[in-house]
Image (cartoon, rainbow, N blue to C red):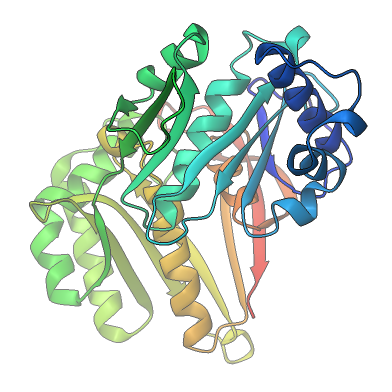
Length: 339
């Protein structure tokens, strides 16, 4: 396994190291409350159950773990509680081992939890934090959480909430692709190339060339060989897009390719990439496709998105394509079985 330069985030409520992380969290929390205990077995029953069998305790929730750069095992965790009774999903049990702090693990965990909530269409995410815990409170505020009226009356406990973007994801008709091509969709492609994404173009990419590509995509959509989705903000402007290309050969009609997954830099952190990808996957399965493939520049941030969404790396090809600056880069091929 090659070393990673950013925290590695994975979802796994059955990970063998999770019980130890949750146990450490609850022991530290008991000590902070002035009711210290020496072992997990002495914890109150509800907390003991979480540490002893997290897979059962969080069966309906999303459990994320973080491994520090260069590390071999997770050193942090967080739980995104599923929404219940109309309430927003809640961030709970954020913990990073003391020796691994100040390496970005806590921020990466909460950011990923926000991405997951946004991908599910949640309008907001909430959490509670003791007012004496200055560092976590500063982290939450830096991520956009704000104090709201309390839903928990315990003295000193702050209730925070972060609204999530309301961008809607919809499949575009060929005419809608044409309508958005000169401005919003072209701007997405230009922004991606300016940001260094390897999406088939070299820099600088002119808006007219980008618009021309989208007009050809509209023609493909009209012929039934390409589907296009866009994330649209409250004013109807594209903030992200993805396309699904259908294989034309007789022996490959069960297969499709995800191409041009784009999210504008101004709209990142809202979970739009996950939502766009999920929309394409659901449509692919509903229309009879059983296998999806894609390729992406090796080491790009997109790899974490695909792995987190259940895609499998099939292999890496060195010097496959140039990046926008003209340097040859490796490409990793991914696939995902549907159904």
